[in-house]
Image (cartoon, rainbow, N blue to C red; front, side, top):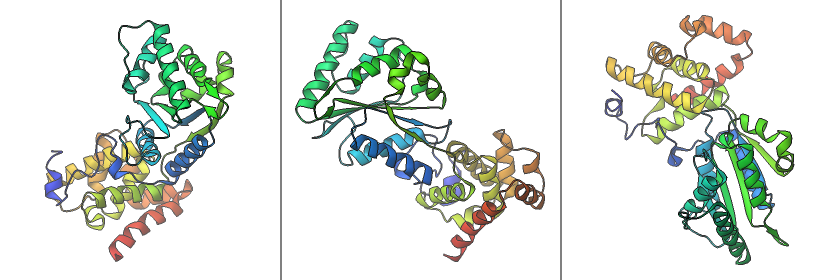
Length: 318
């Protein structure tokens, strides 16, 4: 079913991918603010930075966007003139040696057949030699909430490598809010005090959630005003809470259902069914749209709901 609807709706590609795609990045306010804070912190020479957010809010994609802005014309692992980059997408290392091996591997350095201390010395030598040659190193660790206090302490020690002109290693810890709870443990006080930048990515507000969906449809070659009814758009944005991963899943499922039914547009019924299949629909969503609108108004969301509908109105006018 998932491979049928792009053809049915005359799209060039699936508009809501299952994995992060930098080519479809939507510059949401929260994401752009987080990137700006991280870039400023790196430029200021800060040693440890954090990026946190709830699951599905787009942290991994944001990391790829950040790295592209740091080195827009270079592959991530290629040494540039100013910065070497290691990006660990999985921080589940079972030991200090495992963490050191993962870092060396991502830097395209030998990592097998060495003791923990040999691994540490090899990485230390690489960091210091690079820094002396004018190249700092940036280490980005995704899913960092899985790092144990022992592994975080290893990162702190590596981050102590510095010279008069700055630090040989800068670290960005990326993870769920539990990461900050771990960093606040008394045994990690020395590391917590070094976290100078604490960026956060948040779910999209209703208006941006609607524009997020329309953006992805446009990138895929679709006409948003024809593909989603106003009511369907509002339902998807509200019931997903503005979480990009859930928005992708719900919109994808709604398009699948509409294509299966042979309709030319995703209506409220298809949106509700898609939300129900994903376990995201509640009793309010199952009521008629007037009742849902009244409930939203009492919750303080009516202004955003109107903005959401105005976005589609502007698409019609365009």
